[in-house]
Length: 423
Image: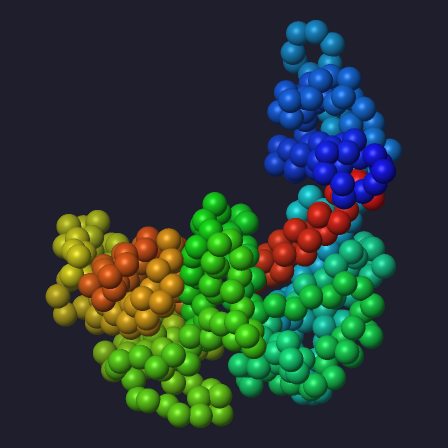
């Protein structure tokens, strides 16, 4: 009975707890000596030595070198064995599938990008397999080396039907048998999540929301969406559709009915990439070539740069609580920035009234391209429109946030499994 796994206080469980604490410290610090691990965990030198010997025998840690340049004998250094497990993440949109493989330490060891524009609509499974195999090959591994795969897509898979909802623009992903076909093609732990939820996971684990239990991430790229974190956990809703705020009816836009068929309307038309482009044309600003998301991001980046240049030159005022823009009068880019801020704040006011989050994180290329000028204007507008006044910040995971979140999600679950030495 004393050695039974899962019984609190037994030697086996206590050893497992110490093992996990040491492994987490090694992940955080990279390399540590036995003495340093003992000090950080409160373990005696003999116990720390036994712990490291146990983890080394289990293939979880490696002796990686010795300290140098200090008085006395050199100390052996240890680190987590990166080959203890590997995970993969995939980020799917209408134009491509981006895949990556990471080792258990979180280091990315292989990436692959598969363009999907123009491919036949029914090849979603083949596309996923091809993208995954490309990343696995780039890592010098095989599929059998993967412990888990997490796939991020627009919309969400309805748990009652298995069908992808809220993403009618993603061809080939709406078959009722799709999840079964993917499971058959990739017989390994396979998880799916909304792309915006995964961007929030990335910000929560390694980005601007680290240490926050209640926050909202507003995503603005090809579409508008939100991720809602309550008590440190993602809130997905009954059908997985929590956060599909692009369809949210808001003042300033026409009331659209049957929004799933129209696939537009509401908040998207007020603050999405299409709204930025429409406003730019109304103001006589030339719209750059490229996708709507790329063009909108470039427009807002230009507007923000002009704002900062004018402010630096002393020609701009400081945004006050009423949201007055610091930019030369008559500048169409300043007006573009101001209208984008107002549109975003109008939609956020509804979310804030219901959720009262501690923090709002702006993410996605369109949202972050406006930089600090746009963020400050949204913050000021939101203060006028909502009673709660959460802090508004720019996301800091700006390179492939969805893919990063997929890897972080896969790593969290895999570490819990691989680092559990009580079994």
